[in-house]
Length: 159
Image: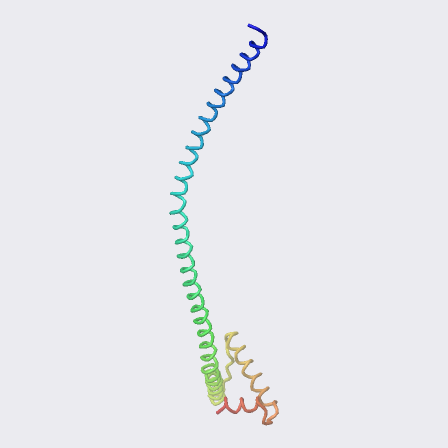
């Protein structure tokens, strides 16, 4: 055998080994690609129902938030109505109650003067209420009697 034939034989063996190695690599690569395809298909099958469930959950949460918004608005309206009602009751009943308290105090004081004894309120709250009433009466007496808004309001309150 000549050197050329030996070199050709070596090159042929080298190519045969190389092709065999490439064939093994391609077989393993095809297995990996098949497994990856199966994995992607499984993930797709499981991901689609999960996305549908997530969409349903988001829609349900939005509905609940809308209900909470409605409830919050109703509570705010109820609080505003309660505030308005308490202001109305205080304005309607508060004035006459103060007048009744002042009248009863005046009657008690007049009766005690008739009997010869003068009693002052014993509790601090009563004394403060009496002082406020006296200040209000002094301010009302000192205020000008013009036809302004304040005068009309006072006349309407007094009856």
